[in-house]
Image (cartoon, rainbow, N blue to C red; front, side, top):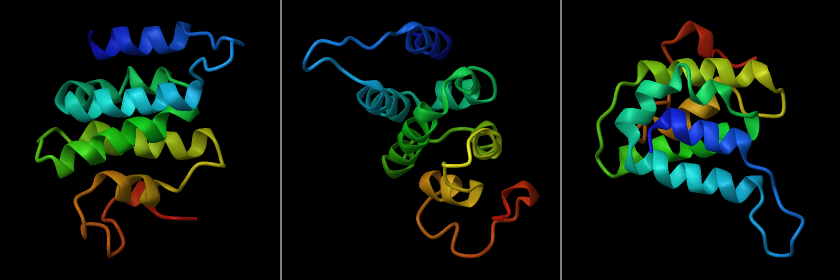
Length: 122
């Protein structure tokens, strides 16, 4: 399944009222696992496809990128950083861009202020 197809599936998914049915948070965890396993294709899709998701799913995607980094996977960071910049203004209850980036950057990379102008904390 391509990232675009996965996003379409998530967007069309409707939670069930049945006991034990998955909820949006569980779907976000599934997205996290998939992004972690296919980080290169999801990084390329971050600029367009992942931005179509509801804000509740973005932390799951970013956690997937963090897992990919820990597993030694390489991918283009620019679309992920752009996703971080886009995610924060879309919903105030989510972390700052610096917090989102620190989830995905290799350990220690965010100890100092990030060099990205759009990632300044409020």
